[in-house]
Length: 275
Image 1 (cartoon, rainbow, N blue to C red):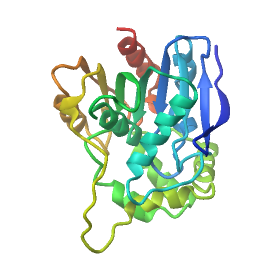
Image 2: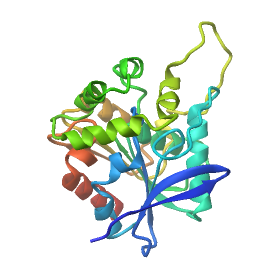
Image 3: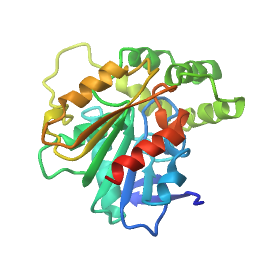
Image 4: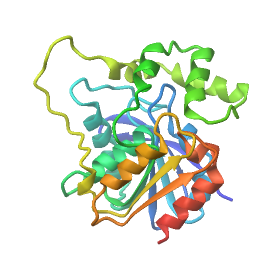
């Protein structure tokens, strides 16, 4: 059984924290985490990294503004900043091809990058979105405005993310601690700021899923209250007919199938990646 390592790398002057396992394998899987308060690669992916690393080289960075990576925010286009940072991260580590798996915000980012005109900034061989895509959920704005860094507020977030209250006090404390890392609250909360006047702005993000032309797997949690099965099915149905697409529903879980049902999620991922 493998155990992932943690490391830091300088990515264009940005100190970037990441998890890594399975270095001896030729094919790379990039894992892109979610975007709630206190989000980080370790919380999104620690339950399945070892399973993936038995067959793949696995990289899971903390995206810019999250985890232990530097806390920066672009009020012009945060999506572009995130995507460019991850692309530079892969280039710095000399990764020129990867299967890319994202959850929630990360899943939406994967689909948006895959839908951009060639050449794609992330060298995506296969794309996977777990409960991500189709725009932010209706409840997201409430989470952004109401989180105050308390244990009760973090418990409220976990109640929305997961179908069952499986976590213990230690896990809750770790999530609260991560949400209080200097700069993380500010970087996450800044998403909510919009000027009280019109601006002529152009954002990089594309939700033209019909332009995706790589094999793509869309995963839904059967009990997800943020991104319902119907919502995720509609995301899948938008993807181009030219792409080899699959849609999977994982039972007994909410927004983070890889956390609540890691064995079943890993089975689905490996089956898709090995096709």
